[in-house]
Length: 122
View (tube, rainbow, N blue to C red):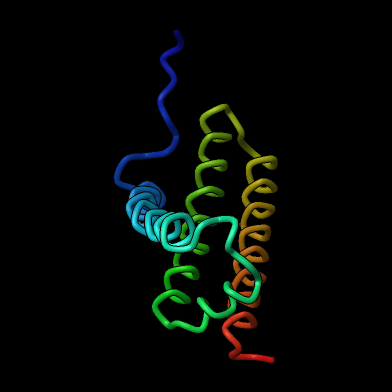
């Protein structure tokens, strides 16, 4: 085996946020599964029902938090996995900005959909 040290440095902001988002994801994913698989069974989930759930402030906030933390956790994990496999130089910069732009677009569009479903904006 190679003795390659992870570039995902312990104690860095990215390292800390990866752990924090993992914990937040455990709670929000649990909330999601409880609400959409036990309270409302998957076969009963409809667009109208989703809009009614989004009208509840706590549900709306949980879904937005779920979206933001999942996007950050997933894209940061991909980026750091690529760094651990030797991504460097110009490619590292390009991948960083592509993932940053993709994450930003994902979060903005997700929030736009959540706001529209909550009926805040017609």
